[in-house]
Amino acid sequence: MERLLKNTPILLAFVLILSLASCSDDDTVVKSVESGYVMSLRTQDADEESADYYITVNDLMTGEISAEGQGVELAGWNYNGHFADTYFAFGYDLNECIGYKIVNNQLVEQGKFVYERFDVMGAIDDQSFLAIGAPWGGGSYDCQIQVVDINEIAITKNVKHPIYESYDAEGTQLNAWPTGAYVDGEKLFVAFYPLNGSSWKTPNTDTAYISVYSYPEIEYIKTIKDARTAPIGYYGGSPSILEDESGNHYTLSVSSKAAGYTQTTKPSGILKINAGEDEFDADYFFNVEEVGYKVLSATYMGNGLAVARVISLQMDEAAGAQSQWAAFSEVTPLLNVAVLDLNKKTVTIVDDVPLHGGQYQTPYLIEGGKVYVSVNNGTEAHVYQVDPVTASATQGAKLIGNQFQALFTAK
Image (cartoon, rainbow, N blue to C red):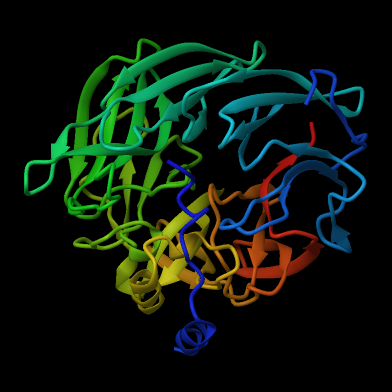
């Protein structure tokens, strides 16, 4: 199956938007890195043939950022990851992983391998990271839970498991699509949402699920559930699980018709799993819809604050009626940046950031108490620096391209 949006019409009429807004080889070398950042810059829209480039950037806030005359062109369309001291590109079409390290101030390819599917990636420790391959289509229900050695750049463990077995009202078995994962002590937690692997319909939307495994054995223990909100996360690998200073984890249930759900029966909200525990906290629930929004992704900033992408209830309803995947269009302005207070349970829109399109994986870079995000307002794309304490933002460098698909500090 091709990437969902490559052949899916998702651009909405701007009259709708405006009315709602008012209510390589192993010795490949990239340009020398003196200081700054490693960026994956995408030059085309999600529904076009895109070109992704790994480039180095020294200034995020002034001028223009371009791949012209620098960087390495990645093969096809990519996800990206930064684990320990290695920068990874995960090819979506070619199913190839390439790892790069900064050696003598240069970004140098270290190795590569092929895989069957990588859909959700997450850090484990300085030696390895987790990569979960989702079951595509309707013929298989097994996910591949894989451990990748960062230094060897190789898969060292691959366990196939269905994660969770569920059915629709007609008795058709559903896939459990992984949306996020983390390791806490000797347990692995995998969030997912049930969907029909052939039609992408989501008939079961009244419960949040996480399957729990032993780690490092990766043996299934149980699936925990909470009926106060919808399933956690959605297709595309956007951050749906946050970790705070104390090791507690917060899960994001989007319940969004613009982000792949064909029905919504529970509110978008946030649940909590306390550090060292393997059940949802019955005393914590942040109903995001009560303040007029659905939360699509976020990153934790400290002191109970998170910077998030949200969509208004009205915008979600209208956009979802046009396309099940409307929130993935980088050039259709549907989303707001917001500051979530997880303790006070409030949502504050960052007015300095314009309405903008969505992204696969939705990268956030935290540095110096600020977070950097990629914003495409439908006309042009910029870096924005967001201050979570003041709920304000500053427009930075213009991107000569569609978006940055990844942004990491250069180490």
